[in-house]
Length: 94
Ligand code: SF4
Image (cartoon, rainbow, N blue to C red; front, top):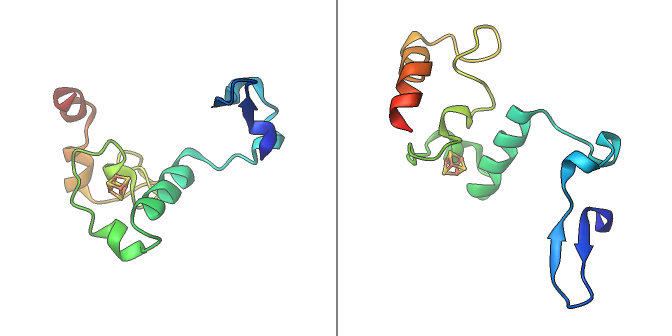
C-alpha cells in the first residue's frame, strides 16, 4: 500500500497516478464494483442504507446498486430507470 503514496521530504503526501502503475499492483476492481464499495463506505457498510440513499445529485447514485441501469443484461431491466438515466437526461442534468 505504501508504494501507492509518494512521501515528499517536506512531509506532504500524494497518491501516485494510477496510470503509471502496474494494474497487478493495484488489484483493480471493475468500475461498478468500485462504485458499490464507495457507496457502502459512504453508508457505514450498510447495503440497505445504500439502497435507500436519497442523494440523487450524487454522481454515483444511479450506479449505487453495483449495476449500470443503462446497460441491458448488466444493469437494471427496469424501463423507468433506463429512461430516467438516458444519455439525454444525464446531459441535461449536467
Ligand atoms: S450514491 Fe449515495 S451512498 Fe453512494 S456515494 Fe453517493 S451519497 Fe453515498
